[in-house]
Length: 412
Image 1 (tube, helix red, strand yellow):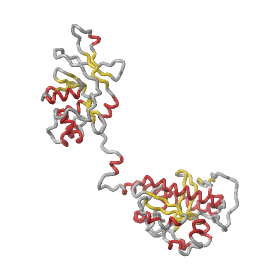
Image 2 (cartoon, rainbow, N blue to C red):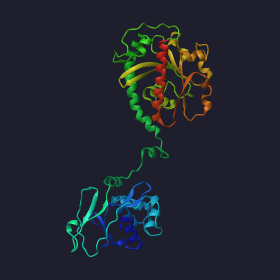
Image 3 (cartoon, rainbow, N blue to C red):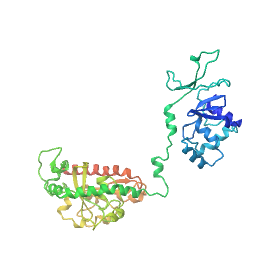
Image 4 (cartoon, rainbow, N blue to C red):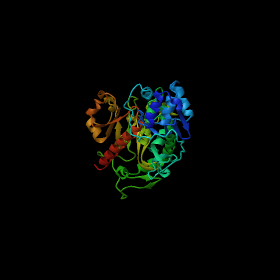
């Protein structure tokens, strides 16, 4: 008989008191003996098979509250029956129902142990290491060497897994009510932000000075590390002139709106482009010390100490000189016509032929929010309101399109 059927039989007969634990096994009177860790044929809604130890402890403690049952079981290090399984399991063990979908009789039946023969239990491991049995004394009709009764085939991995009790996974933690994990994100990025800011200030003077001495075509595909040029093409190229559609001399400029209606501003552009993390501008304003910066240097990197290129980010187009406009390569658009008032271009067609435009939006915003910009030659970049791990992909898309545009413009 299998362990589940034996337990049901003793429960229906009201003989649970005859089930006694001796060492690592349960003895059902003088009828049966099973290992405590033997898996039964009853499968939990969580997917695992309940062990005999779990079911016996449960059926003997159905009279106490569930929370008290769980606490007591944990004290004794016994796996528990989950709340969704309690009712149907108890009805089956008490004989109120004959079966249910959770029962899978796949465990080999255990032979009946003679009532009159005292059991001398010892571990037996035949060629198959997954088989565990008991050895009992021989009688007159059987040879003692062959008196090995295999109780069941044990899956040791499942036995170990049964002792593990997952409390919460990553998704359930993030879905907790009344908890705001945004502050955790801000705190976790603050230290890295400060380190990056210090490094940026230390390198800015030397990097900007060197960049201003080199033509954009000479700089576009080059790499610098501690003053050493690591470019793809080391052949010197002539400097560019401030004519046509080529990039002017100096560090390329990215323009962002000064209004808070847009997602990317001069306050949070550095974290987004350098670190791939979107932090709302109003949060960054609260973190800032000192006045609003007129210019922010943003670096595209291969790694922490390998800079690909540097860009100046500004939000006051009116402060640009005529020669500065030749260095403008990108603009984050607000989606309003007045953003381009007094720009030195004829119309939107000319603007977005010479400057690549980006429009940042939340992915679940209405279509109306991008209705105007869809008429312009700009790239729409969507980010999630809550899934910050997706920000990096959006930032990389901006870099890829920007660098492709700069290369094509440099070779025009």
